[in-house]
Image 1 (cartoon, rainbow, N blue to C red):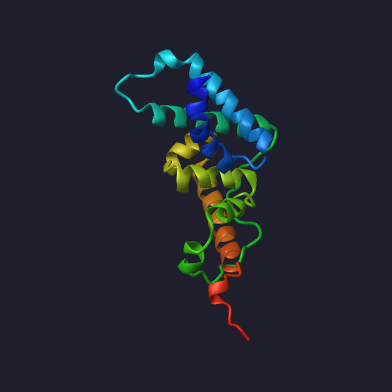
Image 2 (cartoon, rainbow, N blue to C red; image 1 turned 120 degrees about the vertical axis):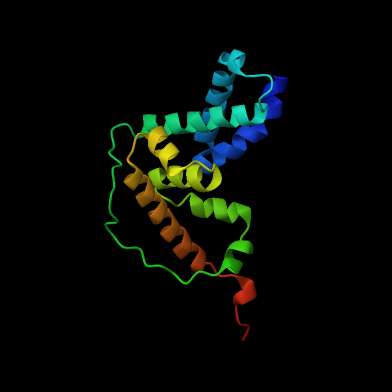
Length: 167
Protein backbone atom coordinates (compact mmCIF):
# COMPACT_ATOMS: atom_id res chain seq x y z
CA UNK A 1 0.00 0.00 0.00
CA UNK A 2 2.90 2.34 0.76
CA UNK A 3 4.38 1.75 -2.70
CA UNK A 4 1.01 2.54 -4.27
CA UNK A 5 0.72 5.80 -2.30
CA UNK A 6 4.22 6.83 -3.36
CA UNK A 7 3.81 5.98 -7.05
CA UNK A 8 0.20 7.08 -7.57
CA UNK A 9 0.93 10.79 -8.27
CA UNK A 10 3.58 9.91 -10.86
CA UNK A 11 1.37 7.36 -12.61
CA UNK A 12 -1.62 9.69 -12.52
CA UNK A 13 0.42 12.51 -14.07
CA UNK A 14 0.84 10.33 -17.16
CA UNK A 15 -2.75 9.05 -17.22
CA UNK A 16 -4.28 12.55 -17.26
CA UNK A 17 -2.42 13.35 -20.46
CA UNK A 18 -3.87 10.37 -22.28
CA UNK A 19 -7.36 9.97 -20.82
CA UNK A 20 -10.01 12.68 -20.34
CA UNK A 21 -12.27 10.71 -18.04
CA UNK A 22 -11.24 10.37 -14.37
CA UNK A 23 -12.55 6.80 -14.24
CA UNK A 24 -10.45 5.81 -17.25
CA UNK A 25 -7.41 7.50 -15.70
CA UNK A 26 -7.85 5.57 -12.46
CA UNK A 27 -8.43 2.29 -14.29
CA UNK A 28 -5.21 2.76 -16.27
CA UNK A 29 -3.24 3.60 -13.12
CA UNK A 30 -4.63 0.60 -11.24
CA UNK A 31 -3.99 -1.75 -14.16
CA UNK A 32 -0.45 -0.43 -14.54
CA UNK A 33 0.22 -0.85 -10.83
CA UNK A 34 -0.99 -4.46 -10.97
CA UNK A 35 1.22 -5.13 -14.01
CA UNK A 36 4.14 -3.57 -12.18
CA UNK A 37 3.59 -5.86 -9.19
CA UNK A 38 3.30 -8.94 -11.41
CA UNK A 39 6.52 -8.14 -13.24
CA UNK A 40 8.57 -6.70 -10.36
CA UNK A 41 11.16 -9.46 -10.80
CA UNK A 42 11.95 -8.00 -14.25
CA UNK A 43 13.09 -4.72 -12.72
CA UNK A 44 16.87 -4.35 -12.84
CA UNK A 45 18.29 -2.93 -9.63
CA UNK A 46 20.69 -0.60 -11.47
CA UNK A 47 17.89 0.86 -13.62
CA UNK A 48 15.64 3.82 -12.84
CA UNK A 49 12.51 2.62 -11.04
CA UNK A 50 10.66 5.77 -12.11
CA UNK A 51 11.54 5.24 -15.78
CA UNK A 52 10.52 1.59 -15.59
CA UNK A 53 7.21 2.46 -13.94
CA UNK A 54 6.45 5.22 -16.47
CA UNK A 55 7.06 2.75 -19.30
CA UNK A 56 4.54 0.34 -17.76
CA UNK A 57 1.96 3.14 -17.40
CA UNK A 58 2.45 4.32 -21.01
CA UNK A 59 2.17 0.75 -22.27
CA UNK A 60 -1.04 0.27 -20.30
CA UNK A 61 -2.48 3.46 -21.79
CA UNK A 62 -1.51 2.31 -25.29
CA UNK A 63 -3.10 -1.09 -24.62
CA UNK A 64 -6.26 0.61 -23.32
CA UNK A 65 -6.42 2.69 -26.49
CA UNK A 66 -6.05 -0.45 -28.61
CA UNK A 67 -8.82 -2.23 -26.66
CA UNK A 68 -11.17 0.75 -27.03
CA UNK A 69 -10.48 1.23 -30.73
CA UNK A 70 -9.83 -2.29 -31.94
CA UNK A 71 -12.74 -2.19 -34.38
CA UNK A 72 -11.92 1.22 -35.82
CA UNK A 73 -9.46 1.73 -38.60
CA UNK A 74 -7.22 4.74 -37.92
CA UNK A 75 -5.23 4.43 -41.14
CA UNK A 76 -5.17 8.05 -42.35
CA UNK A 77 -2.68 9.09 -44.97
CA UNK A 78 -3.95 12.47 -46.05
CA UNK A 79 -5.65 15.44 -44.49
CA UNK A 80 -9.28 15.40 -45.62
CA UNK A 81 -10.40 18.77 -44.25
CA UNK A 82 -7.61 21.31 -44.38
CA UNK A 83 -7.27 23.09 -41.06
CA UNK A 84 -6.22 26.71 -41.56
CA UNK A 85 -2.81 27.60 -40.18
CA UNK A 86 -3.32 30.31 -37.62
CA UNK A 87 -1.05 33.20 -36.78
CA UNK A 88 0.75 31.79 -33.75
CA UNK A 89 2.62 33.75 -31.10
CA UNK A 90 4.83 31.97 -28.56
CA UNK A 91 3.72 34.41 -25.82
CA UNK A 92 0.27 32.82 -25.90
CA UNK A 93 1.78 29.43 -25.07
CA UNK A 94 4.03 30.85 -22.35
CA UNK A 95 1.09 32.62 -20.70
CA UNK A 96 -1.24 29.63 -20.82
CA UNK A 97 -1.78 27.67 -17.61
CA UNK A 98 -0.72 24.00 -17.73
CA UNK A 99 -4.27 22.91 -16.87
CA UNK A 100 -5.57 24.94 -19.83
CA UNK A 101 -2.95 23.35 -22.12
CA UNK A 102 -4.09 19.92 -20.91
CA UNK A 103 -7.70 20.87 -21.70
CA UNK A 104 -6.62 21.95 -25.19
CA UNK A 105 -4.73 18.68 -25.78
CA UNK A 106 -7.85 16.82 -24.63
CA UNK A 107 -9.77 18.35 -27.54
CA UNK A 108 -7.67 16.38 -30.02
CA UNK A 109 -9.21 13.28 -31.60
CA UNK A 110 -8.22 10.19 -29.54
CA UNK A 111 -5.73 8.73 -32.02
CA UNK A 112 -4.08 12.09 -32.68
CA UNK A 113 -3.92 12.81 -28.96
CA UNK A 114 -2.19 9.48 -28.32
CA UNK A 115 0.35 10.06 -31.09
CA UNK A 116 0.96 13.67 -30.00
CA UNK A 117 1.54 12.70 -26.36
CA UNK A 118 3.95 9.92 -27.28
CA UNK A 119 5.90 12.14 -29.68
CA UNK A 120 5.89 15.59 -28.09
CA UNK A 121 5.86 14.73 -24.41
CA UNK A 122 7.20 11.19 -24.03
CA UNK A 123 9.87 11.70 -26.72
CA UNK A 124 9.02 8.62 -28.80
CA UNK A 125 10.32 8.64 -32.37
CA UNK A 126 8.00 8.32 -35.35
CA UNK A 127 9.32 4.77 -35.86
CA UNK A 128 8.67 3.84 -32.22
CA UNK A 129 5.11 5.16 -32.38
CA UNK A 130 4.53 3.33 -35.64
CA UNK A 131 5.68 0.07 -34.08
CA UNK A 132 3.85 0.54 -30.75
CA UNK A 133 0.51 1.38 -32.40
CA UNK A 134 0.93 -0.92 -35.42
CA UNK A 135 0.28 1.93 -37.86
CA UNK A 136 2.35 3.24 -40.74
CA UNK A 137 4.89 6.05 -40.41
CA UNK A 138 2.72 8.15 -42.75
CA UNK A 139 -0.22 7.71 -40.39
CA UNK A 140 1.90 8.84 -37.45
CA UNK A 141 3.02 11.90 -39.43
CA UNK A 142 -0.59 12.66 -40.40
CA UNK A 143 -1.66 12.59 -36.75
CA UNK A 144 1.23 14.84 -35.74
CA UNK A 145 0.47 17.31 -38.52
CA UNK A 146 -3.22 17.36 -37.62
CA UNK A 147 -2.47 17.76 -33.90
CA UNK A 148 -0.11 20.65 -34.49
CA UNK A 149 -2.59 22.46 -36.71
CA UNK A 150 -5.45 22.01 -34.25
CA UNK A 151 -3.29 23.10 -31.31
CA UNK A 152 -1.95 26.11 -33.23
CA UNK A 153 -5.47 27.18 -34.17
CA UNK A 154 -6.81 26.73 -30.64
CA UNK A 155 -3.91 28.57 -29.02
CA UNK A 156 -4.13 31.42 -31.52
CA UNK A 157 -7.80 31.86 -30.64
CA UNK A 158 -7.13 32.11 -26.90
CA UNK A 159 -7.95 35.49 -25.49
CA UNK A 160 -4.96 36.56 -23.48
CA UNK A 161 -5.67 39.54 -21.15
CA UNK A 162 -2.15 40.90 -21.66
CA UNK A 163 -2.79 41.30 -25.38
CA UNK A 164 -6.23 42.91 -25.12
CA UNK A 165 -6.60 46.63 -25.70
CA UNK A 166 -8.51 48.40 -22.93
CA UNK A 167 -11.08 50.89 -24.20
